[in-house]
Length: 480
Image (tube, rainbow, N blue to C red; front, side):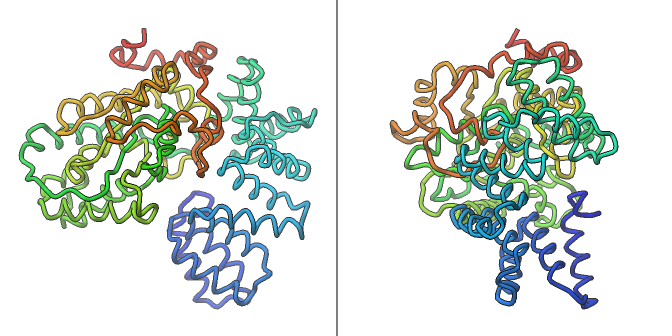
């Protein structure tokens, strides 16, 4: 039950209680515990547990599958691929193995091979048809739509599979330009997920209020200077689905820039700050107690964290979109950092969020399943970004997605100059850069820039009307 609700930390404690009872067959518990450890990022602990059991049970396939998951989380995608291919030789029709291999291939950009794996898996488990669409291909099975609709429309099935298939059907109909049908399944998928999401827009509004109140111009004027590190973090922020992954892919195609993906380091820092400062005040209120020494310590924590991903590149990109809420903390602790804000037409941005099944954990992306909640999120995001522009003691590079699509080279030259690196022709062929991408944009960044996402919201104008009505006039003004 805890795992189903993504409460993996509590699940781990339960597994430990079960282990103390000395179950007759402890291996399934070890497999489940290792999976939960991976989910919460405790990779070292998972490594010890998996290796210990593999010494005793080297041919245990569920354990080896967990090992493949662990390898991916550690960035060893090639080893994970090799392990899964080895297992498939023995179990060629295992849908779970084929899906896992397909997902690994998808992350590293082998889209055609990934699609083949998903197609083979779908022969046994129709749920894999949803994965085929993530590879930019439509299912080859002529009966695919019927099979998918049987799952999405079946009210006796669990919400999760129905929602997954509803989003897939919406994407399929979108590709076929059947926008009314796509709207129907978008509404179904999002309503199913919204029923389980734990998201309160009022909580986020209060958080933004606190950020604006604490991180004032006077706050930054009072800060004592601190030393800068020898690495330059590059923060790419903005609403999810605004073009942040594309921006990171372009940047990390440069030989001096490493793309670390979506790092949780700043989020963790903000969470532990009250403990560090020994106060009951939550973040950001506790930041008024921050000393210069503690700011330097926080910077060392962050720089050590990115070193675990790359130890040599002078510039490391942290592409966590929601770090737009942490720009005050970044400015206070990493004064040498570069900040890139990516934005686009809020209606296209909102639609792109509404089209993704983020499977929001603990409500983190819960707003994406309801159009009015998306509008409120965008309004608050716009409000706090306006504040940062006025008070931050460091520049923000404003990158408009629509301008990037129209003039990739020109805007990229400005972007590289802002960061402080020379031009490299490699950035114009970003789609050829070999690196793992694990965001919802996994297939988009494997192709040259395209313009079909501009003004896409007009195909869904009737569906999006509640969102358009709820967006602040100031947010829409530049786009009208």
